[in-house]
Length: 494
Image (cartoon, rainbow, N blue to C red):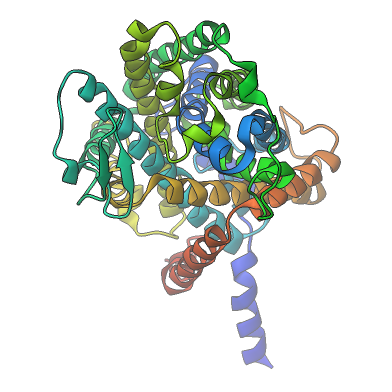
C-alpha cells in the first residue's frame, strides 16, 4: 500500500498550487530583482503599444478578404467582447498577484503546477510567435518604403521559401531564401530589451504616440473618400464553407485578428516592474483595451470603405493600399514610416512579455536556471532575451505571416480561457484574499469569457488546432522530462 500512496502523491504533485503568500513575497523588491520603473501611464502605453499593430495594419485586410468582408468591423467587436471578459479577469489577478509571468503565474496559484506549465508553454505561441508575425509584416512595409525611393533588395532575402510576395510596384516574388529584414528588427529590439525596461518603455511611449496619431489621421483623412458601394453587401453571403463569409466568417475573422488584442495581457507580464501594481495593472489593462477597440472599429470601417474587401487578399500592407486611393498621396510615405514605428513598439512589448514569462518559469525551477539569470548591470533577463532573439528570428525568417497569425490567435484564446477559469477557482478557494480590483458579476463574466473565447477557437482553421495539439504535446513531454523533476515547489530540497 505504501508504494501505491507514494505514486499517488507523486501524481497529485503536478496539481500542487503555489501559495499566494509565496507569490506576494516574490513580488517584493530586492537588490537582485527586477526594477520597479513603470507608472500607470507607461502601462497604458505598453498595452496600446502591443494592441495597435499587425491586427490593424496587416491582418485586418486578410480577415476582410478571406472571412468577413466589410463586416470585419463586427469581427473586431466580437473579439473585443471576448477580450473585455478576459480583461476583467486579468485585472483582478494582476492586482492580487503583481508578479512577472502573467497567466502562467495566475494558473500556478489557482490550478496547479501542471496547468501553469501548460499556459506558460502556450504563451510562447502568443508572445514569441506574435512578435514573429509582426516582424514579417514590418518587413513588408519596409520594402514598400524602400521601393518608393528606388531601393530594391535582393528578392531572395526578403521573404520565406513558402510564400508569394507582391510588391507595391506589381513585382511578384514566388518564394525566397529568408526574410532578412524581419530577422534584423527582431534582433535589434532583443538587444534593446537587454539594455533595460525603463529605456525600452521610454522609446515605446514615443512610438505609441506616433502610432495613435497615424491611426487617427487615417480615420479622419480617409473618411471623406469612403465609397459606400464597397460596403455592399456588408456581410457577404457564405460560400458554403465554414468561415468563408456570412456569420461564420465574422467569427473566423474575429479569431484571425484576435491576437492583436493581446496588449492588455502583455501589460500583466510587467507587474513586477510596475511602481504601484495594485492600481496600475487594472488601469493599464482595461484602459488600453477600451482605447484600442474604438480605434480598431473606426479604422477597419474606413479601410474597407476605401477599397473593395476582396482586393486585400494576401496583402500584408492593406493600410498603405487603402490610403493610396485618397487624395493625400504625399502623406503615404509618412504613413508607412509611422506604421513601421508602431510595429516596432508591438514587437518590443511582445518580446519583453515572453522573456518575463520564461524568467518566472525559470525562477520556479520549471526551466533551466539560465533563463532566470539577471544581468549584473542592466538587471534584465538577458539570456532569455538572447534565446528568444534566435527563436523568434527563425520563425520570422521562414514562416508565412498567415500561418503565424493563426497560431498566435489560438494560443492567445487558450490563455484567456484558462485565466477566466482561474478567477472562478480563486473566488472559491480564497474568497477573502485582498483584491484591489474585483471582476464584476462573477461567475457570469468569467463564464462568458470562457464561452466566447472557446467559440472563437472553434472558428479558426483546422490546421491551427493540429499545430496547437502538436505544440502542447511537445510542452507536456518537456514538463515530465525536466520541469517536474526540477520544480522548486515540488522539490523544496533541491
